[in-house]
Length: 447
Image 1 (cartoon, one colour):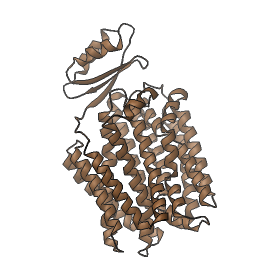
Image 2 (tube, rainbow, N blue to C red):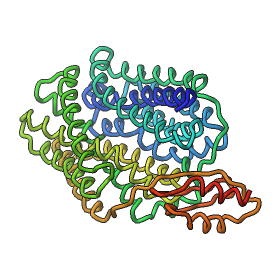
Image 3 (cartoon, rainbow, N blue to C red):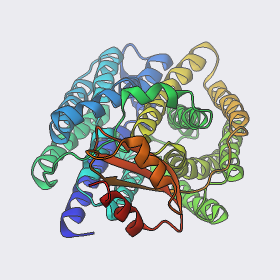
Image 4 (cartoon, helix red, strand yellow):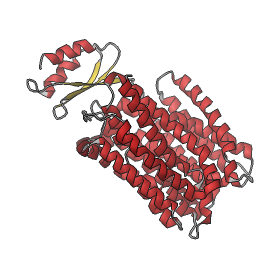
């Protein structure tokens, strides 16, 4: 990467760390700290934990498309402002209902798509994967950091302190976006941002809908876990500020489990390993349902859960990227992200409803049942060849898109081509053996 790309990657990664850490810090503390509110109930706790996911799911695609029209930075800054306002409303809340309003406003700052599009705009095609990898690592790091420090902040400054810090972190992101991230011209977005015309066909794609449901259940389960787990740990006499002593070794061991699963996968994402990871999560919820006040069972279950979760959180987006048609990855990932955030909302709602109607321990059983249904769906997933994506600028003054597509498909290593006249771009899915020089020479014939 050149200096401009390194600067952009680090700045955008830091924006992600600060913003996502603010969202994640609430998860391990809200269920316990919210007991001080006069209108406390398990259902309202569930809505408060997952409420941000509803507006994130609804606005992820529209905000991404707005960034095409208004520019990346204005939309990102607007999203950060909305997120900060929601954070400060939640920080000042004197009731669960006001806090839920704040959480819903936090979710309305749905800027993930715009940030990824900006990362694409500021990087060359050959270096784009590295930029995205830096941002992806930052997202994972923000989650682990938030889980560890969230309970410590809550212990010192309460739930209001957690939300207050979240709002301040969002404000800190704004100068990074405004002055540190380079200004660039918006590039073609067919493989970056959603197009409305593509959403219907991708929504019903036999393979993609399985992955969309997968990420929905995945985030339903982690939200459900963090609504219930802090309460479970308090039953063992553990105060909120000591929960990190469980989370830290659990996350460390689960990363070793992730490395094992990655080693088995050998750089691919085989269906058998995906199903194994989902089965580990189902087993974890069954163990939590039957733990009978044994802390070692809880710790073992959470290790199994995070081993499966870490693998799937990293692998499912790669599968979506591989399966999505050429030139439509932006639309596919937009739908995927919407399902992901809706899963967070669903997890909070399900946990609250089940706890209200039955018992907290039954919520773990509900998660296990959801995982079992998910595994059945995963059996319909097909093995896919890992292909690389490439986009190339082209003039359509002397050639029709269909003619260009047919010509490019004749080249070795080309598996799929979409020529977009509106973007002035051809999108390709390629494998080993593809000759970039031959492709450029072919395109030059039509210049």
